[in-house]
Length: 160
Image (cartoon, rainbow, N blue to C red; front, side, top):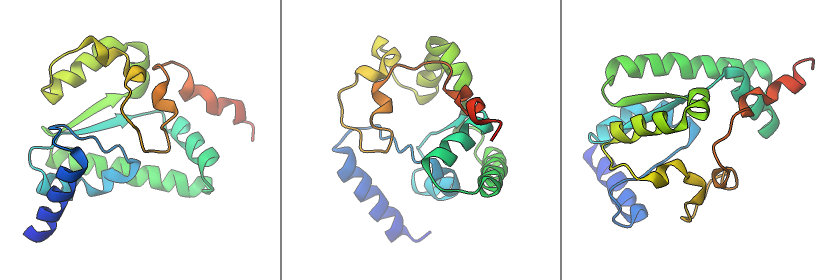
């Protein structure tokens, strides 16, 4: 990758971060760019949230107009590519099981904070209380407590 592209990414990130040492980008499609991100930001740590595929499909089907076959193929692409990235960058990718996080929030959050090399704060257990702005499609959802059951919502529509 040309150094000018990396320099522009870093300059843009510096501008967006306003000097904060930690920046999060939670776009679902980022898995496609892990190789580029790893090259551009060698100090970056990558967090991969694993979730029941049926729950992911349900979110995609209700949130967008995808054909189910296309969503299944896309999930296969994600799974295969993440297996590849795990072999390339095993020490830089941390996997979290979404359902386990909802059942055992404290322990799973502590493990994540430890992996990231951040200091533990009890506020980590109440992300819904964070008042920073959120500019994503899930801006309302991030203001809710972590809860169980969302991965089972698809079952209501199983017969369709």
